Image 1 (tube, rainbow, N blue to C red):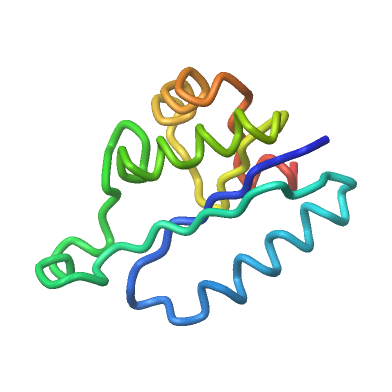
Image 2 (cartoon, rainbow, N blue to C red):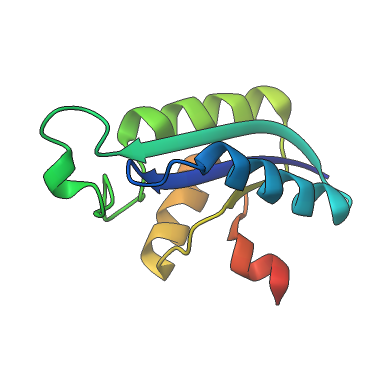
Length: 112
C-alpha cells in the first residue's frame, strides 16, 4: 500500500526531520510504501511566532497551499492513504478525506 506522510510542527521543534524519519520507519515496518513526505512548520516566519502552536486551519490543520501540494502528490503517486503524524479532529479528517479522495488516518490509528 502506497501512503503519503504529513507532519505539522511548531518552529520550536528543532528535531522535526528526525521525528519524520522515525515516523516513516514505523510506517515502513507495517508494510506500507512511503511515496511522499510533507512537513508544515508554524512560526518560522516573522509574525508567526505568536501563533506557532495553533493550526494553520481549523478545517485542515495545514495551510491551503500544503493541502494542494499533498493532493497533487497523492493523485500522481496513486497513494492509497494520507497519514498524519499529528492527531486530527473528526471534522479535519472528514474535510481532508474529501480533499484528498482517499482515507486520512493518523499515527494514533496505526497504534490502535
